[in-house]
Length: 130
Image (cartoon, rainbow, N blue to C red; front, side, top):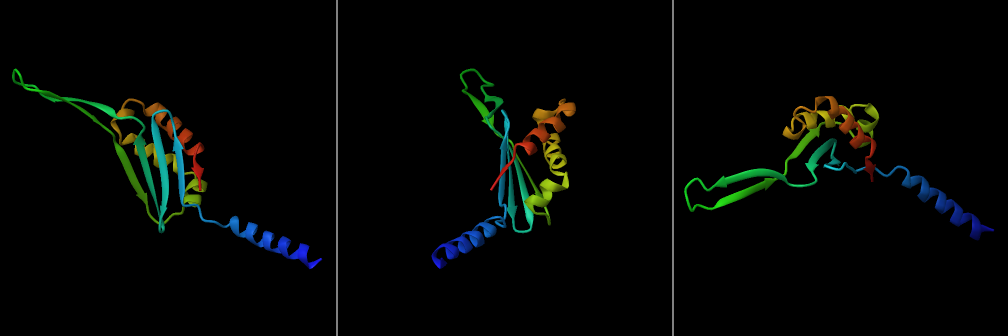
């Protein structure tokens, strides 16, 4: 009888501990951007990045025979929210506001002000945390 009870007790103890594992990272992606929220000590680091490189134009070639160079790049927006945990940020209702603020600071959302909160809400809704 003890052979059966002891494994059940141990299983119950380990499964209850698993529910208290701290969330350290959340990720989400849209068709154009990725969002990553990372717990760093007592703070949350929020990173918004482009999925693809953006066309930055060209430089050079001003004089005849001079070579032109193509420019591409990515914009990484990083914010640190001090003194908050990932679960607290998600439950506070301010996560969408944080991501919208990050988007407002980026040039590709210029003129998209009516859609920014919708985009931010989708990224927050689709977060997968571990």
